[in-house]
Amino acid sequence: MAHSLTTKEDNKVTLMLKVTPKAARDRILGWIKQPNNLSLLKIAVRANPEKGQANLAVQRLLSKRLAISLSLIRLEYGMKDQYKRITIIIDPLRLDQLLEQAIREDNT
Image (cartoon, rainbow, N blue to C red; front, side, top):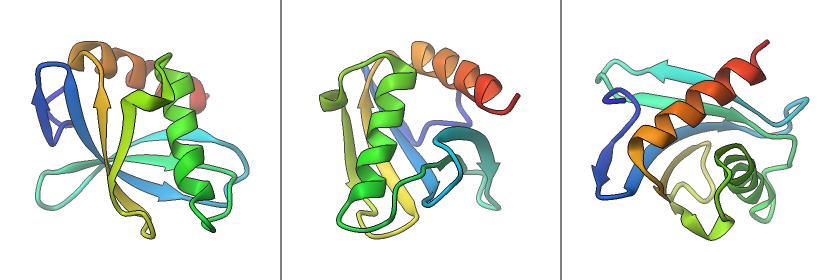
């Protein structure tokens, strides 16, 4: 899971995202490797990037796919940008398993 985390402590994980609004469907697309060796999780949502709709759609998608409460997912940075930083309260190993499963399911 080293490629997917920016930080982890106890059961708190910080991830970097690249979000595409106005997509055909909500889905977790996979990892994008950056030149600085940081990986971004690419997510597409149907919502428009207006009035926080896309941000909420990202949080709801992750909440559903990770089977956790929406309150455990916090948008830390990127409220008005396609690049975002989120913090999730979840076991890092469980997060990795659930994200890999979601990526497989959403891309078949």
